[in-house]
Image 1 (tube, one colour):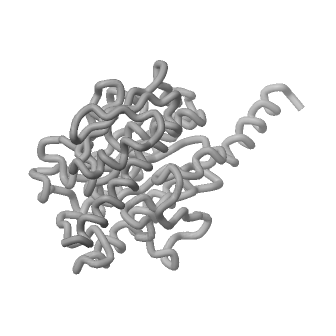
Image 2 (image 1 turned 60 degrees about the vertical axis):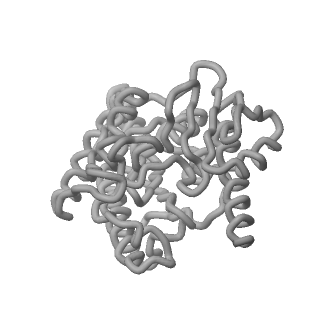
Length: 299
């Protein structure tokens, strides 16, 4: 057997076992235009579930067409049980349920070739960003990483990068584009909607959305196969500045070892790596929810 043929077989064999990790959120998806869609107790939630399941299948089918042997989809919105399990296409596994460690990215440490972030929204504090927030719309006002306003995309890309997994595609609110192009310029960005305000957005028909996602995935896979996608790595430690929406939440969060209380609403924490940073963000969000629940029960 010639060296060229042997090399070709090795290359093809490697591509046959590519694994994709898809983290899918809700607010950045087309068809999502109202708070009445975002959770089980809301009147239009069933519409949101259908949309999220449709997008899951559209993305998964295209990834399987592009040669991925394994697709894992992390249901990453709210209680994280939105995708209709019985309707998901074959050869796809789901991660569902919440709370769970490392939230939108749990399991990526098990070994994947690429991450795709679908339905991602703009970071908290984005003008016109549809339902903009970062990790907890209820309790967290804004999060800064090394003095830069950060989104869920950025925190999650750093987490994946820690395990040497590159982000190859991000699809969601147009107002996330600038951040993606800055931090992971190799990643294909697909605008699925554009916010006109916090509670209104514009998006295309389903056929156009499917076409955009399919073409975007094809381009992203090309980038991956060329070796142009890189894991996102921080330069040193990560200084977190978390601004909370209520002083009570900060009262509770300041008890996390290593935190420093800055003012009534703000804590800071210097994380050694992205895993520690995301863990602290999650704990602070959970403590905030506990504080919110305690306050509501006293009303």
